[in-house]
Structure formats: structure tokens, C-alpha cells
Image 1 (cartoon, rainbow, N blue to C red):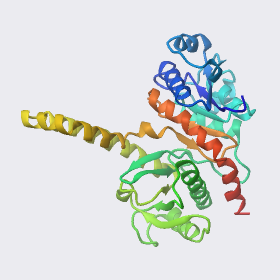
Image 2 (spheres, rainbow, N blue to C red):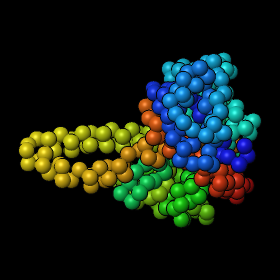
Image 3 (cartoon, rainbow, N blue to C red):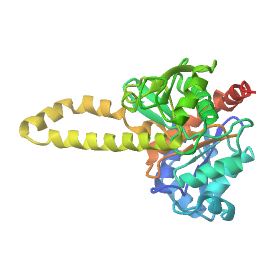
Image 4 (cartoon, rainbow, N blue to C red):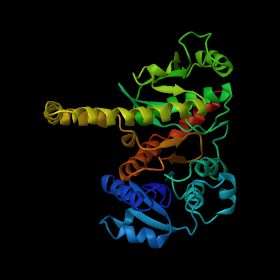
Length: 336
């Protein structure tokens, strides 16, 4: 079992559980013989889904959990009371060392709370940030933080920059990633109190490639590899990204259907357009890791389909093989 990258998957989390979750898990083990998936949830429902597929049984294990934490439940209370929930049981598999990583499309709040309370923070990490990949004209950038810490301090943002740099370089393969802080202008003197106080700290940080401020309009152009901000700003950026992307695709499709000429043109450009739009599909990047914990915790969209679950599971391979937590520990230790 130690030869595998063991991933605990919350089979009951999300709008499409358990069918899309199980499907994504099976697609992951079929794509990589390095993965073993622990499907955590109501075993009768999971086994019913598993009957639909052929797979290597050595790569899939079912762990029964009777309870489910719903999205609307208060996270702290749910983690404390529902010890037999799929989220708590899956996180405990990481805590005890049975699994290297956890993936869930379920309650974001419960995952964030459980990650910190059950899995625990790496010593020296002040706040674990949630860090999704977002598509850009040059590939993808890491947005850190997008939902875990809405009242961050300057020292938190410095750690976000360090952890984000480690992730981009070791998992994504971007050498010496460019780090920028979200601001309302390029000038160093601009910004709110948090940005003004954080800017010089990042500027004088020797182990990151800080390139200064970045305005929101420059993020899609790929002007930086690691986009640093507190979670309120990050979440607004992420949701705007998703909303504009959805509207743009809808409008392009509508425009192509307005006349016979446009329909003929649509048929001609469809293959190229499909490939172009695929690069801006958030599903291909998997979920958002909660960095700075003693194990990998990955949160995917509540509406995740099988492809996003699969990619979220597969991203755990590089995280373990590249020893990301050891590298984060080394970066954070340099502060002391």
C-alpha cells in the first residue's frame, strides 16, 4: 500500500454525489497506477455505483461513514458532532497517515475547519490558504487565498507567497514563479492598509520572485504566476472569473446561431474554438489545495463532475512525489 499515493475521497460531498464522485475516482485509478482511492461514505450507495465499472480492486477501497455534513450546516458544530461523517472520517485517514491526501466537493466550511482541526497545520504556518489554479493567456496562475482567511494580516500574505511559490514550482513546474500582490494600481504607495504594509515585506523577501502589484485586469493576461491576496478579494476575483467566463461562452454560442452565414462559420471554427475554450475550463486544473497542513487537503467545486474529481485526485501524485510539505516547512523555517 505504501507504493501508492493514497487519497481519501469524500464520496458523499457535492451536488452530484455519489455517482460523479465515484466515476471520477475510477477514471483516476484507470489513468494512473500510482493512485489508490479510499471512497468514504455510505457503503451501500458507493458499491452500487462501483458495479457500473471495471477497475483494479487493489486501487479502490470503501470506508463506511453513516453521516453526511450538509453545506448549510455550521462547520465547527458539524465537525464536532458528526464524527461518523464522510468528511471527518476521510480527514482522519489523512491525520493517522493511512492516506496522503483528501479530496472533497462537499461543504467548504467543514473542509476548511476540519483540515485545520483534524489534519493540523505545519509548525510555523499561521493560516492555511485555499489556492485554486485560474486560467490565463499564458497558461494558469495560482490565486492565493480565495476563501480561507478573509481577515488576513501582512505576515499571513508573506507566507501565502512562499507556499504558493513552492506549489507553482514543484507541482506545476514553473521555474522561479513571479509573485504579485493584488492592488488597485501598480504604484507601491497605492492600496489599502493591508497591501501597503505587506508590499515592502514581499519586496524584501529573498526567497520569492516578487514583481510588485497586479491589477485585476492584468490577472487574465498571466502577468504573474502567484496572485497574493486575502480571501475576500480572492473569492471575488474567482467568482467574477467564473461568471464572466460562463456569460462569454454563452454569448459566443448565441452569436454563432444568428444567421445561416454565422452557422456555417461556426461549423468551420468549431474545432479550433473548442480547443481554445478548453484552456479556460477550470475543471482541467482540479481542485484548490489548502496549503500549509500536515497532509494535502483539496477542495473542489460543489457542482464538480467526474473530470474535476479525477484531476483533483491526480494532482495529489505530484504533491507527494515532490515532497511539497517538506519544502513548505523549509520555507517557513527560514522566517525564524
